[in-house]
Length: 105
Image 1 (tube, rainbow, N blue to C red):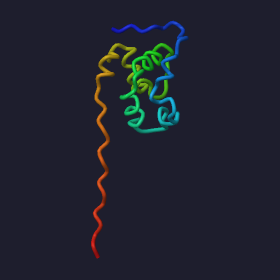
Image 2: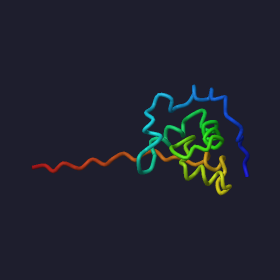
Image 3: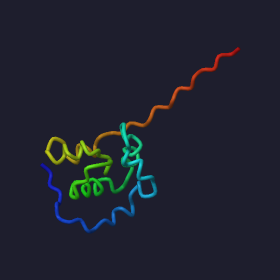
Image 4: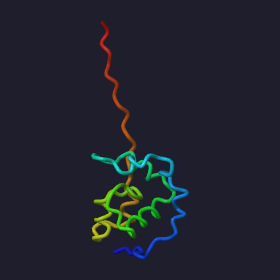
């Protein structure tokens, strides 16, 4: 089982380099559905691990942190999933939408 600090988190300088820094909060706290946009942003974030460790240390119950949903963070806490396993997951690019073919009249 991995260990992460449960001590008060005071150093949050990693936020300055976060890919989500200038994005809408709603992207990372979606009302419903799969948060694929947030996951794609997190996948290319240079501080993804620090963000996830912060969420675990501060018991964040909602939203996407470090590319992990609340459910995935609970799995990490229970030892079902490791941080490294989660970070190694590939987030597939979105498939282009098919255009409806126009019928010639």
